[in-house]
Image 1 (cartoon, helix red, strand yellow):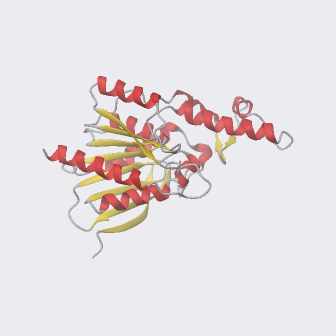
Image 2 (cartoon, helix red, strand yellow):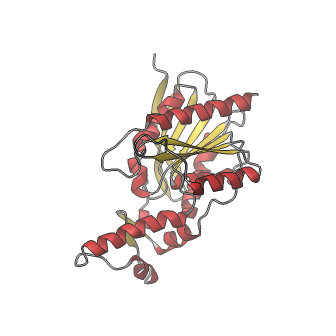
Image 3 (cartoon, rainbow, N blue to C red):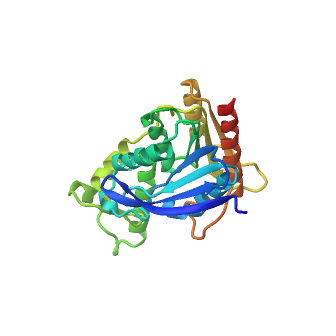
Length: 279
């Protein structure tokens, strides 16, 4: 007998339709886990890891929900119309459906920029979430945008004859700039510059997980920036731990890779949160 089933269907959001996947436990649902996706192609690259984690959680009685933000994946909207505010609206819409039963705990699992979106979402919900798990967190939209701009600058330096116009010049002219294969509008760029998940999430506990490629036999360690943010949140009253797992950056590699340690740690964190909720 299967421990889980997969349901996929298109659902209505504000201004578009998007596919929603649900990994449903065969037995009683102990909790709901909403996966908040990464930015652009990082979302596509991380789909397999999200699926593996959702399947693992469903095997423990936690129903997993996966959806595509406005203009991404199988959304009916175009990416050129995407903004951070529209993405947050999508998060609130799906969270209201996922957390319809107040007796069932809700867990947020964010990947990359999805961690910052999950942090903001936690403040928009009617009740605190049981736990927030962040994979390779990008907590500032500026960091995401800067990485994309560096890639464009590198391409321009290597092939100046084939380079497109400078993205900031295009935005100043009211045009979209192609970054990472996606048309980023001036509105989205402006919102990313200002987006910072600085305020501590409204949740019982947070676990931020760094994914690092090991160097020799040395153990992987958490970045100092992530430690600092975790300390700030803990001091603000939200217990926040940081951990590191060894593995490739599955969100930005040529070939899909698995990081089993990340899945195992995610399951363990959620289990611990549910034990605390029950207590």
